[in-house]
Image (cartoon, rainbow, N blue to C red; front, side):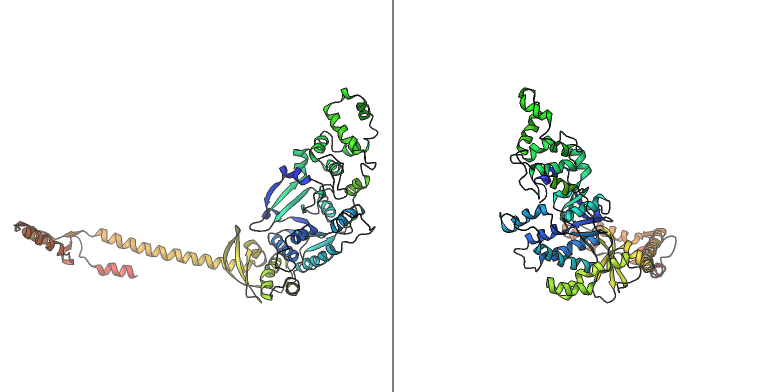
Length: 477
């Protein structure tokens, strides 16, 4: 969930971006968000363990467009969140535990971790909430952005957040940049924390009774981001506000707005909650993270897909082989993948990218690979292929040129001959016309002229004898 109504507040600065623009980037992914998405749509699906299937295909999509994902798994839930979690599970009952274990989520995470390890993708456990570690990695420059559905990632310090991840078709994602939020909406990290105190969040679902998003934002935009939390802390002892309370006529619109919010907020003796502020601002110790893609294990995946996804061996190989071949082309300097290209079948265009269709040893199926990746691993083979196809193209063009030149030669020879009709036959036809008397004779004469076809003897060459053998020989040779 995160901060109540924060996503709707940030919608005006969201940018729709095609997935391929993530090429070359390292991103952190809040795994629990993808698990929950899949479970929500798993009610009427015949596919076993839909969350594993979706995780596999989404991760494949990222790896094949050149993204290095780091999956962050939830650790122990903060004490502040125990009440919220237990209410989600057991309804509105008050929390009864002082140490809460997310059994179902942990079970899902273990299966996901196993699959991701088979695919060669990095997994890391957060000390607390997954979005907290994602945000820290982003803030410290370890990753370019984070994928999550929890808006409180901004309160933990995230700078670039990807939401509504869509891998179908060409794929797309909504991008939220903190710089754009600060410049256009005048809302910074501290103001978001203040908003969570006023409107509610995972650690305090109610917030301040009677204060909505619009009222809170209208007030917060009057303040500097650096001073907003201290302003809330000193509401009870603020002499200016206390004096204004006694003198209604001196109240400006800004003072009236702040007094309205303050008076409702301080009804709660613990407002503002220092525990919530500390949760968002503290920087816990976190494990060292390696941003790399290691060798995928196709044999382990065949077994995993059979038991967890109920996939046939052939189908599992068909879906997993592109990962193995792509890793081989991009990273397999020591040829650990136990796979070699046997030949380039033909050129292809895949989503606007120039590719080759490749045949591999040990496998019947082919894969489509970017030409740049194939060139990197097999430069000599690519050079031979391109040279052969270039030579073949030249031969075709040469044959067409010879044929055209023969036709031109024939045309020139015909044009050089001075061919004329003999006048004898024309004279005979004229005499016949003069002998025609009645209509019947005219009809018969007309049909007879039609039947008089030209023969070779009807032509003569004034300059040279007509010898078509030379022309025929020229065409043949």
